[in-house]
Image 1 (cartoon, rainbow, N blue to C red):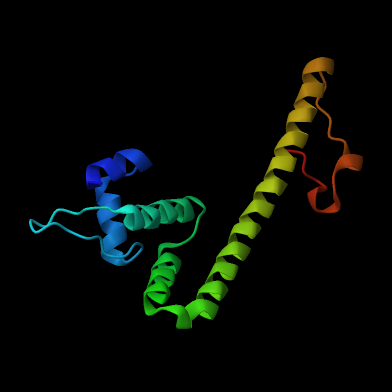
Image 2 (image 1 turned 30 degrees about the horizontal axis):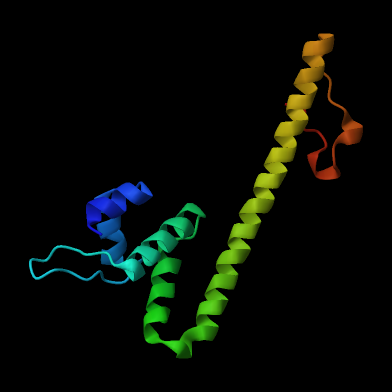
Length: 137
């Protein structure tokens, strides 16, 4: 695939793709004799993985480290696993934060639904968990 085809398939810019290669988020891509990048199946899998991981909030430096370790070979299995476990913990923390935010939004929406029905906005303290007590805004 050409850089244009990869960009179209994954909805990213050529600048982003070149940046990923330059900093090591993806391994170097094979090139033609004329210097044109050619994305084979393996390169496309790296691109897809990088995009997925970035969209999940994984920092560029963690991806660079993972690629570096991968390129060092099977002796880095433990380090790669540890890196992925740390990334997973970070993603889990974000999910937990989103769950809390979603709960708060659902609660507030329910109170506004009730206010629209009755004409009075009230906050049901009994349904608030301890850490949400006083959330009346």
